[in-house]
Amino acid sequence: MQAPESVGDLNPEEAFPEERGWFADPWQAGQWRWFDGTAWSSHIGRAGDAPPRLPAVFSWPVALSLVATSLAILALLVVSPVATASGLLLGIVPMAIVLPVLAWLDRVEPEPIRSRVHALLWGAVVAGFGSGVVNTVVALLTSDAWAAIASAPIVEEALKGLGLFWAIRRRELDGVMDGIVYAGWIAVGFAAAENVLYFSSAADGGFLLEIFVVRGLLTPFAHPLFTAWIGLALGLATSKGQPLAINAAWGYGLAVASHAAWNSTLAYTQDSGSTTVLAVAMLAFVGLFVAAAVAVVALRRRDESAFVRLIPVLAQRYGMSDQEVSSFATWPRVLATRRNLNRHRRKDFDSIHASLAQLAESHRRADAIDPVLEAVLRHRLRAARAKMSETTV
Image 1: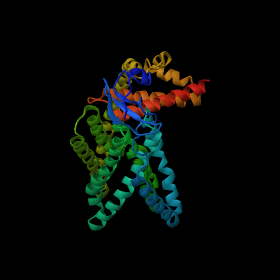
Image 2 (image 1 turned 120 degrees about the vertical axis):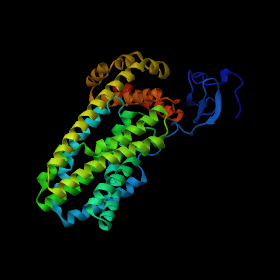
Image 3 (image 1 turned 180 degrees about the vertical axis):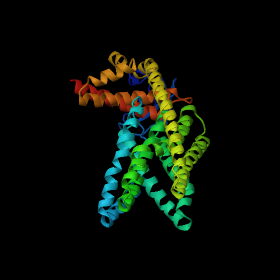
Image 4 (image 1 turned 90 degrees about the vertical axis):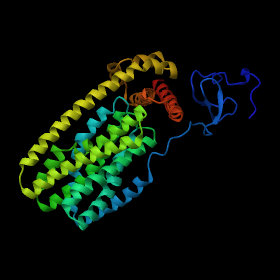
């Protein structure tokens, strides 16, 4: 590479960036170069008009498991069409209860819809299909009770937890709330797949109403609460620079313990016929749910405050306009601005908000901001601003 003779040979806008990061190469069009805060380095980014890319959204385990699960559902529809159709329809009800809650929690730093869909599918097809195979084998070799109490919590929470590592690989799980949200989406997908089997079996057996009330209406948050321990642990690890393996271990342990305790209660109630233990367990579950709800609401309020506090930093670093600073100055202002936009401009506003929120979360982390992620988010922010300008005109 031939260095320029003088600063005048450089692109004036990129000659002296105000901060470290990936920028268009001043000497070579169509590629990116890392600026370390004082000088241009020898690190060259991906050629082309786009910044370095993150891993692809959809993964091969989801694709393979989706095919296998679709074939299994088709087989069930052929063998028992009425019961299977009932299970599929009623399986939507718990999702309709849980997903709006997850959407509200995710409002401060909204995750990409494709990533949330991937998490949902991971839970439904990868965790659902994989654990179904393992639990069935364990039940055949031992007993249904052993599969429910031992195999199910260990295998199911492990497979659900792997979906969270995919989100980390995509650099999209970068805080505690992200961990809880992604855990929730994965768990909802898993619960939906599991409920289809339970509801279909109950419809064949003539006790659909009882199973639907317990699983669909009284405990729709059971699986999200179990897997939330893993999301909490990994969210703490990514936000505070803690070891992923250590945090994953204790988060997984708590998820398995809570899941096993719940399954043990159900198994004991079914064997003994006594509802006292189940009633006590339900009260404990309700107490845990209330405590978790209070905690995540407080966490959501904290994230709102942290985001608006970082707006001056983001404004200086990423060149926010006065109008943007005003729109994001307070959380009520964010909501009011969004509410007053039409559908097309609201979508563009959400894209700007998502990029700024993820940049804010990245600056809150204990370690230095990821340069590749920052480059991707800069690119998304510029694209969203350009689309917002087009819809304004």
